Length: 185
Image: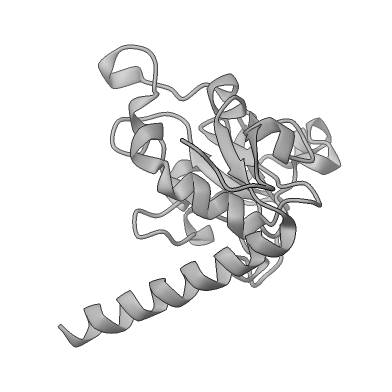
């Protein structure tokens, strides 16, 4: 579709500061220093529940580079599993009040916005595409997966940064209004 003047169509990877990819398959432990963010942490209601994350074996910590650790504003897309494939969430530091280091597992894809793209704008774009993402899974019925390359090549309409912020404020206001109306029903 046509976009306003001053906007540009971009592949999602062009909007990111690091490669869009999945996490690693962790070796779990009863206790540790680092948590593994699994797709069940990305809740159906749109929230993030770190309480569902599992500990990673301390002996495997050195496998993870600094950029693999989740950061405030990272967008999480569930990449496998019937019923959760394509679910979009956003990780905030406030979701992890104990500030325990956390890395994604191999069932989620992480999208980290670059400096010229507001993370909330990317989140709202991807959240609007969630039902399409669910249908982009490849493979057999019970083993569908959303490949990182598919996510990297998604086309996003990108406005100037100031307009991204304005759009995010308006969407947030509308979502707040909807929540208030739902509470009154």
